[in-house]
Structure formats: C-alpha cells, structure tokens
Image 1: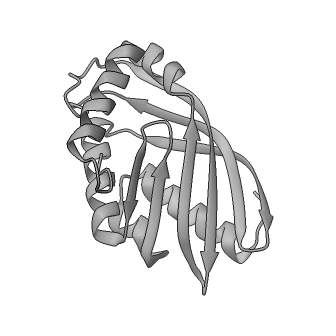
Image 2: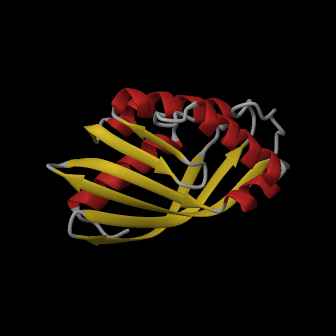
Length: 158
C-alpha cells in the first residue's frame, strides 16, 4: 500500500476490522463517520450506528478479514482493493448460517479530514458472495428489501 497519513489510517482501520475489533476500527474515525455498503444497501452514520452495524456483521461473519493488495491515495481520499474472506457462521438478518466461506474481491473508498477517516464505501459483488455462501441471491435481495421497507424513511442499520 502507498503510505500517506490517510492510507495509514485506512490500513489501521482494515486491520482492526479484520480482527473484529470494533473499538479499534472506530478509534481512527471521526465522530460522524459514515459506513456505506452499496451491495447491501446499508448505511450507518456516527460511531454508535457504525459500531452496531459492525457488531451485527461480525456476529454473522466472525472470521471476516481482508487482504489489501493495493491502494491509491489522492487529496483527502484513498482507495484500497483486495480480497475479503468471510464464513457465514451466524445468522445474517434472517438468513441461517451455512458454514460456507466466501472470498470476494472488494474496493473500499475512504475519505478523511483532520487526521481521521470520515467515511468508507465498501464495494463488492453481492451475487458472488451469495453463490459462495450457498445463499440464493434472490433470497438475499428479498431479505434486504424487507429490511429496507421496515426502515423506510430512516437510515438502514443492517
């Protein structure tokens, strides 16, 4: 990875998330940090919402980890890419654990200011993830649609 102050923060954040260390990940984030996962249609804002979202995710995927293969830093932005590995070992929303492991390519785009990460947008292939986990993509999309309908008019906290 290219070493810049922002990329170093992104590295620390990724390492903490790979250790399922929510407090460690949020230690490098601003108070109003935003975490977006467009494939899931989820967004959290602020440390409390993000902590809850990460805790729920790590309960379903307790071995979640990323291998970062590279990064590109710009003015207030850094993009990292690599492979995310996770086993569906716990219930995810209302999807039962399959015990299967997925390895999917990802790209994360971070923004930062004042020595803190201010956002992460985490991109990955939902269909590829579902196939490897043994979960129907249609089932996952229906579950996410139900979640989105239940939280219409509010931020999604998946």
